[in-house]
Length: 422
Image 1 (cartoon, one colour):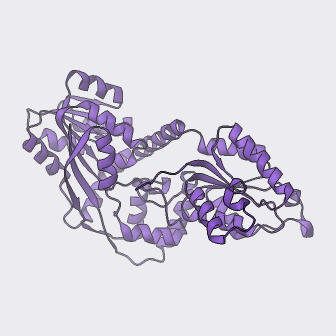
Image 2: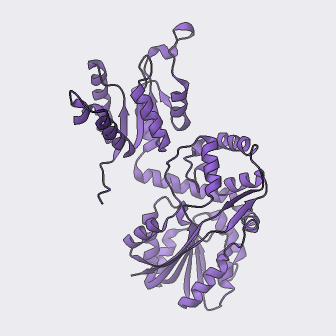
């Protein structure tokens, strides 16, 4: 199966039926490309150059390119926003792509009867996760801040995740304990770790993303022969783990370089990664780091959110908030995880899926869940929420929950997989 297609940074959406339009498009696209962006412009395609193109050809050519783009720039200078452009804007939103508007028409700044009218539905879509710029120079500047480069984006996302969990560290354990009480027969994660240690006779154990040390406490209570190392990128989480595991953990650190140094001298027998990987922006890089910390034949035990987690809540929020139907999925699937792990030199040994029922007693309990696990910031559910609009999202969710019936029943999906270093 050929699933490769040229990728674009920008899909340029504008009319191209007049000489003026085509000249404007060429000038803007040329400047975007000079700035380093890979741009798709429909007027450049062979399909649209035909004298008698088929509607189906135009639709498929442009839609495939749009779905392989990182964002859409929609030019809305026309007296009435072009129908094709409006359709492209809607399609982009439905697939979770950010849309940036460009409106240079001077009538937008007029008042009274000669002010330019813009369809509020199309404007609303653009402004939901982007903005409308009044000049091409402002657009390029805004595009640079939003898209940046891949390395900068990964660093920013990692920083955002660390900040979030540092902010909730103080109340994290209490909430997790309460959350587990709402589950019907939740898995015993500590027992899962202990069983793996016993079965593999592991002595050197790394808890990768140890958080507040809850799993570490279970591990240290299992056997005095186990040397436990904990790593977590959040200093606030790690501070709680240090208090909890005082005198028992061999080493706790918030620096990944420390893990690499220890592993270089004494590779680990077992790495535990519980509910961490779905929050990692560079999963490929993180799996390579984990593989590098393991000895040959060592094991990685992953417990994490599956892509089917809380399906009813996610769907109700998506519909109630009017969020895109198709959005990037950070939660794990076995296919995605095993493929990326294999690239890092980790072979899948076994996999289990746990799907306990859960019941949220009140609307405020749902809100606390969404807050503690960063859903308002765009994490844990594929809702394409804007992390820069947390307050607005919280208000919308609060209003939405007011019309729901509680308790709210749903089902979790936890993926548990064991890998060995080959």
